[in-house]
Length: 543
Image 1 (cartoon, rainbow, N blue to C red):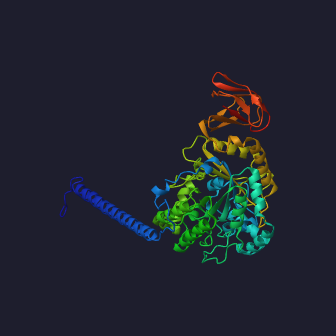
Image 2 (image 1 turned 120 degrees about the vertical axis):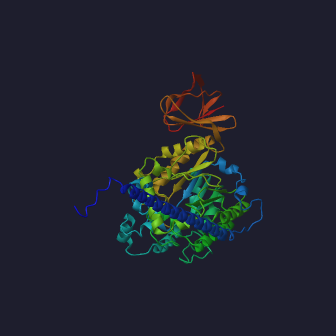
Image 3 (image 1 turned 120 degrees about the horizontal axis):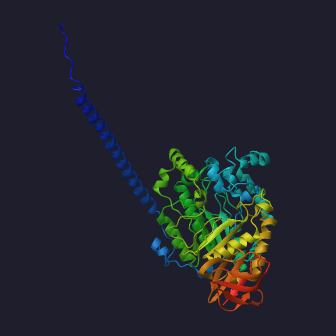
């Protein structure tokens, strides 16, 4: 047939076309990867350059105001020894007190860790901490906002100043100091400025966003004098990482909490206020919370000045410094991405609870796990920080059932001492009058009664070769040591013989506050004959 073309052999033209297509695909992939790598390199260079510039700008504002042995370097600061007084003192009292003590409200029934697992999107506005009232009331659907509308209408948080000041007419710092001394505390730490931004002293440092948002009366000075008259050490708490007067946005998530923008105005403000606290009150403990808004060099300048001013002072481990990276995380899309990752992580077992323990800091005198203790002897001194109830600030919603049992608090105290630590137990006084509610005061009374007999097993002691054992009855036993004397604290109500398993103790034995008792070894265990009388937490002196 005219015009007929013979058929091509099968695949005679497809093979080279396929090779061309594959080649083109690889070229596109190569160009994409090259562009991706170039973008990554450019971003890394921009980030590195931005970090260098940010650090340089921040570092050049660092300056020391004292002469002394300590300089503004981590190497110099790490030479600061843990003062003997602090290592000896096993029990302190923290005070969360401020404008939030007037409404005294927070929802109860869920821990913060549980909220991170189940309600991450508004964990910061639904948490059980009454001291967070100023932030929580800005979330219109939060329990705090609903409570505020019902009781105070549209009044701003600052309106509580009037009620707080009125209550101060009945506040007696000497009464507080006597109560804390009677409870057996060796030191106190008070919220000089919480995250709500209200300062409990007549600060001369001007807040550009909330002028005169501070006490007119020198509450810190009066309290410092009162507790020192009782022979107690005086410490100040400062919220360096968060101040809501400089950040009007509602903090709902951890991303908001950690990465909202704070500018140079806040950095200068925080540095000036902490320096003012140091020079005015010479606090024995400088207890910062959350983080610190400057870079390392400016922080180290402040801490070096503190040590040169108060050589026997101590600082905690919550001074995580700012960086260019934190600024990068400020935009909402970056915080959203962070929150999505954290939301998933907190659904994994145990992750939410881990937030209660700070990561090791480049410099600190002690660590501060919150509502958490260690079950082994720690190389670095530490302090368990916890409330008596679920809130640190006064929460009128809490009743006696919401507060920890006195025996549990005594157990926390002895476990801390046995593992090279201390207990900082928080009280939340109500209103401006600063009344400590009966339910909290009763716990302090019970601790006082126990310490009145047994405090020699805690104060001035150090960890023994092991921190704990158990009795045949299943009670935990905690050990401390002072010289050649070993103390055994039985966390239970033993009656009759007390047999401590897998521990061989030798020497003369006596019940602290009581009579000598017979001590013998039985195999690998120790028998304290007829040592228990059914009271909680008996202490035995051996050696």
